[in-house]
Length: 204
Ligand SMILES: C[S@@+](CC[C@H](N)C(=O)[O-])C[C@H]1O[C@@H](n2cnc3c(N)ncnc32)[C@H](O)[C@@H]1O
Image 1: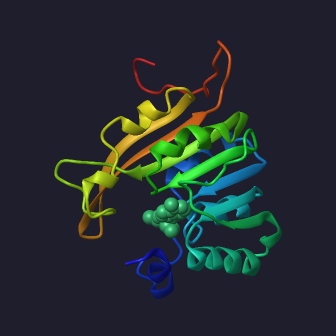
Image 2: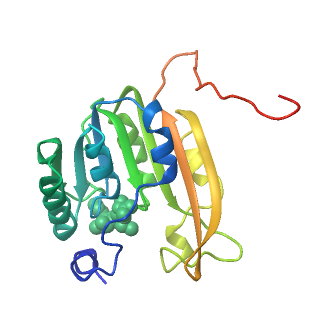
């Protein structure tokens, strides 16, 4: 089924929740201008706009983007959301433009170098996608070909400062979901800085 039809018929979740990881890290991410690649019907784009970002929501589905436009209007932040109907495999991402780039459930490793180059210095990439798993995950693409192998997403981000990386499986309704998630900062130069984490427990 084509994406336009999925959004039109509600086969895809009609108002999907952003990742709990994105929510949890929001206060540590740089404010400003965001790009949501393969924005769909607005999982990340609407969440970020609701939290003050100016967001470019890019997708090739006109149906998905019209839902984004309509929701941005009805929620009162249309002035902060720009929808861009484009093919992410050929789109010319502007360089050094975004404080935050998000990608959820879209495999695009061959464009990742250009997408990372769209980050400003200090800008942050949030990327989550389906993962191969054993037993096999049943949420997401019909074939493992479109899922990440273990550590594939992490390796693809090693030129950034990785602030968070996780691979996890969890039951979703009567199915099994497996996801890789990375948050990584575009840090140049020899010295890195990482968020402070409070250690807990006996050996802390
Ligand atoms: C699984 S959905 C994810 C949507 C949204 N990011 C989310 O997390 O709910 C995949 C999205 O990728 C979009 N997509 C697929 N191929 C694309 C391409 N070449 N360029 C832009 N968008 C594309 C589809 O239109 C669809 O909206």
